[in-house]
Every structure is written in C-alpha cells, then in structure tokens.
Image 1 (cartoon, helix red, strand yellow):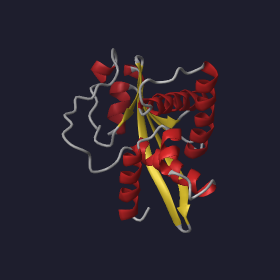
Image 2 (tube, rainbow, N blue to C red):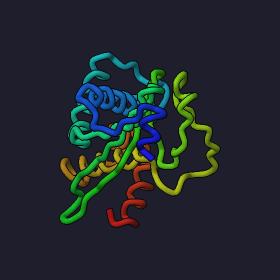
Image 3 (cartoon, helix red, strand yellow):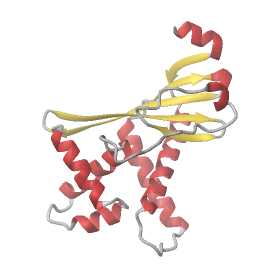
Length: 194
C-alpha cells in the first residue's frame, strides 16, 4: 500500500526536521495566543507586541517540552501536502500517564489542526487551498477537543504548583479559558481515571 502511495504521490513517512518542528511549534503557539484572546470579554484590552511575543515564547518552550522534539511526517511531496503527527506525553500521577496524539496538516496555503474524525483528504484540492472542514455541528461533542484537554491539564498543574486554594475564576481568566469548559474536561478526565 505504501509503495502505491510512494509511486503516485511521492509519499514518504519520516521524522520531521528541526526546521519543520520549529514551524509546527510556531503555528501551535500562535493558535494558543489566538485562543487565549477569544475568552476575554469585550472591550478587549489592546495588546502590546512584547506581551504577545512573551506569551508565544513561553508557549513555544512548553510545547517543545511536551512533544519532546519527535514529530512524524506523512509527506505527500507531489501534492506539497504534509501531515504532522505528534504526541503530548506526561506523567499524570504515580503509575499514570497522559498521552494525546494530535495532527496538523500543512499545505502551501497554511497549516491547520486536524480532529480525530478528519480521515479523508482530497490531495488534488489541497494543492491549491487550505484544508477546509465541512462539518455540521449539532450540540456538544462527547469528547473535549485536544486543546481543551491540554489547557485543562496545564491549569490543573498550575493550581497544584502554586496554590490549591486559589480562585478558579481568576486562573481560568489568566489562562484565557472558560471555567465551564475547565470543569467539563475535568469531569471527562475523572470518568476515565486520567
């Protein structure tokens, strides 16, 4: 099967280069910055460049630590499309780990996060445009998004390190995250003993 892909699309399965990992980490950190701004109530305060750069710099370090510098690339060279596959792996508690697999698709038009249900890709269309998901969303998904799980784990770790008695409203606001989503993800993780 891979031989057919290699012949038809010049497919290669390989580890990402340092430059590719840096590009991926920049994309993820930039998205984290955008997401952190979504939950700030209007009127949104003006952001100075130093604040944004500081946030992205901290996120870059944290993301690099989480993915450990190992990223798998599904490279379709003939179509100029790559899919980056990486894992967030951390010890959660004694004898318990957290392992979240995530994917990002890269075309010449840009990068985009992929969901678990994103499995079909029209490579001919992806040559000239970004990946566009035609999804009909009705209601809340059963499983929280990878970003929500990661952000919740970050907040939980922050609370453990700083002060367990601290006000969750303030922490969620500081992280740019919805308190409702935080509690929903915590409940989802607890049901699965994570």
